[in-house]
Length: 373
Ligand SMILES: *Cc1c(COP(=O)(O)O)cnc(C)c1O
Image (cartoon, rainbow, N blue to C red; front, side, top):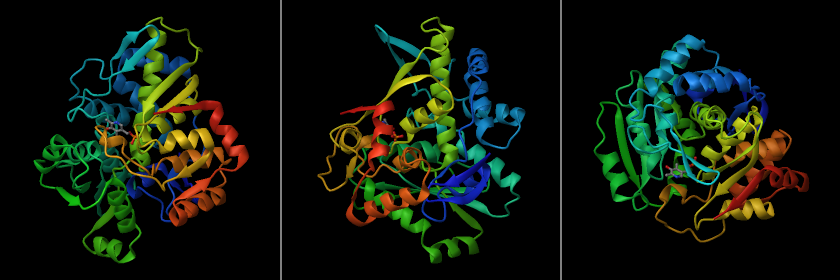
């Protein structure tokens, strides 16, 4: 499959190449050229075999790779998870269920994608016969850093450097990161909050001198943040799995719709739910859950995105984010895939720290999304 940039639909490359690049050269994010349609009967049956096989099925709709290769890749990626089902679906009460995404090596749900991404990058380097290695630069609000370091640790032809806000992560998260093992890993504290760290990393990607210097040292730059399509695609799988599991356990009938409620920071996790929905998983509402940094709640209610507000440090630092990068991918869809419109909104965000959605895009939002904090 090919992917296109949210800021220039003519900027089109193979999905495996986008895994190596991370962000598009025009500053946009890579999105699928179209949403592949899942055969839900096949999804439901495959989910009965194993999570890793279902994950391979989903990944095969995005990446030009064989099913056998992908099956081996996902099997290895999820081998270290400490639950036999990988992602158990447990009943909470009534018709509420919890999808347990914390059974990976670092306990963060980010392991779901970050155990897969380094392996996708290795494959992509082979496919595109890239002589250079890949240097991963990643900003973290806490959990991404550790999960990415653990995923890339000692993976051949990769190196990773993680930037975290000096006073924005929990003591445990900091300890997890600064004690990281591996010959190709590094961590760096940044003065400021997560948005400062993320903005700094984005500026590095756009700095021609820095990129050239990395090239002279035989490294291409890429990102392990959820702006990388190689991180987003593996996340689609667990929504399809959760749905299939409820069907297989006779909780719902095939075709019934479900709501997914997702704690949200950079809008990656819930965007994967949106992709699952567009690919054919029956969804009634996607519920975007924020903490006191409720910029997304306001956005979904008003259509206005405004970062000119106080930043609160909370007990859930991974959700303490005012600039949710992946929202750009949703904007692209609700603006009718109009990359010029997206560019205007993103320019307003960079200039005034705010933008307002056009009226028809607003209507698109309220149909599928619900938001609270
Ligand atoms: C990363 C993270 C989030 C936010 O997920 P996004 O994909 O950035 O929206 C929320 N909670 C926890 C515990 C996390 O690690």
